[in-house]
Structures are given as structure tokens and as C-alpha cells.
Length: 209
Ligand SMILES: [Zn+2]
Ligand SMILES: [Zn+2]
Image (cartoon, rainbow, N blue to C red; front, side, top):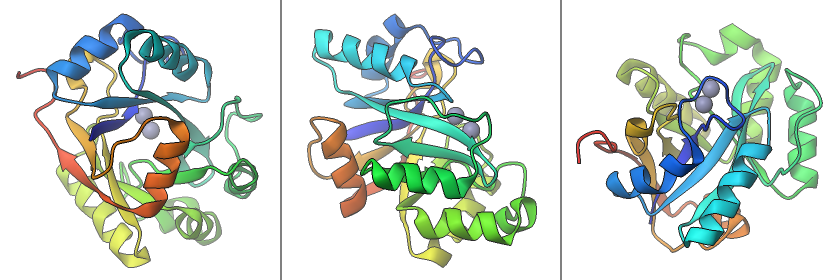
């Protein structure tokens, strides 16, 4: 099942040009079987898109992208807004663990070769040791940055995911995650992300179909 795990809409991410109504047609055009909405710092967009998916019968999952003192982090299993603009990673880890969710560093090497040098040893270590997977294929990052993310992933023995980081409809599916098992809802997604039966993939996206 091909799921784009990193998508922004204009509901909650002012930097995105994607209307909720764009999501399903463009996801289908990109050959995706599902989407996970990961707005910056706000749960509303994912909720609105999830309701749309329920009505239209297309799998849409709820995540979030949270700014932390260890960089941007994809969060699963949290359905409320963060309390801070930049959440300390220690606080995020406790919050997500208490909720039964999980975290995945988003584009950990974008704009910087070395996560630890950029954010400091302690936050970077806590992030990497608390994560289940690393976003090694991020559609908004250079191939060189994605390669560095893959090396970081190897170093910690984590799983790899892909997400488009789409801010325009035609960017949907330019990277995605291919899950071996079907995923029905947010709990299933969390369970499968932990189980590790998936691969990070680079796609053509919706622009070429
Ligand atoms: Zn980001
Ligand atoms: Zn993003």
C-alpha cells in the first residue's frame, strides 16, 4: 500500500497551496493508495482531511510535523496542538510515548550535514534513540541530503520512510512509503510503522501521470 507520509495543506500550513479538495484526485493521479497529513504545529488540517477521506472512501491518516530543538519531527498518535512553537525534544518524546504514538525525524540532514553538530549532542541523541524510523526520502530535500539521512538511519539501525513534503498538488507522491500490509486507520499505521514491513520509495509524483 503506497502512502505519502508527509503532506501539508493550506488549512493549517500557510506555506502550502494544497486545498483539501486537491488531495484525493492528485493522490490517485500519483498512484498513491493513501495520504498522511502532517501540518506544521496544528492538528486541524489533518482532522479536516481525515473527515474528507472518510466521506470519500480514500485512506487519509493523521500526523503532524512539530518543530523541536532537534529539528522537524513527524509525529503520529497525537491529535492536539503542541503547546510551544519549538517543543523541547524531551517533552515531545514523553508526550508521544504517553499517547502510544511514535516519532520520525523529518529531513534530518536538510540544510546541514550533521544533525548532532547543528542541534547539539544531547537533543540529537534523544531524537535518534527515541525514533522508530528516519525520513530518508523527503521530496523537498536534495539527493545529497537524503543520502546523508540514509547514513544516519543506518547508524542507528532504524527503519526508512519516504514522504513528498508536498506543498503543491503536483508534488504529492514524489516520495512515499510502500507498506506490505493494508492499513485501515491511524492505529494500524502506528502499528505497521513499528513493525517495519515497508520501504521508502521515490516516485514520479502527480505531475507526470
Ligand atoms: Zn520540515
Ligand atoms: Zn513538511
